[in-house]
Image 1 (tube, rainbow, N blue to C red):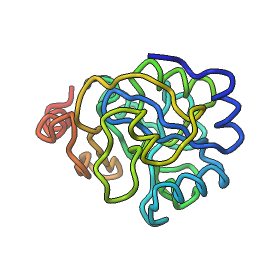
Image 2 (cartoon, helix red, strand yellow):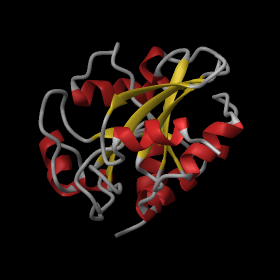
Image 3 (tube, rainbow, N blue to C red):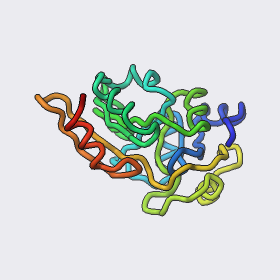
Length: 199
């Protein structure tokens, strides 16, 4: 495992796209500026109507972007860090490639991913592969497939095979409405059960 070097931090701050390890699949990260998102979406051959999530070291890093309810904090704390990507309402409409009126946020668990977010702020947290392709097992393999230079690789190994579980929770009604967008490392039944039995 390695933390981002000063060269890598400069590279991503300049609009570059970096492959980094997470607790699940290798991630593809850029700072969510117009320039960074342009490069990332071109690299992944990803449709602009398919938004990417953001990864953070802590939710404090996105408190200016999204509405964070106390119940959401309790929910996230109940599961292993890095296992959930939770969709929050945006305080202001964002780039549609980030979700527009709502943004998926994942709190990183992997030390290298956390160090990257601590160094540069929120980064995109999408799998490091072209759209429709199977994700690579290692950051080196992912970077090679995408044709990225060595300064775009933060080395390290993942700790599990599945991606994060994507969850959308609507707190506007009398009772929370929970939608599992994609089941991953956290089982959908555990998510639903927590909300049904919430303290």
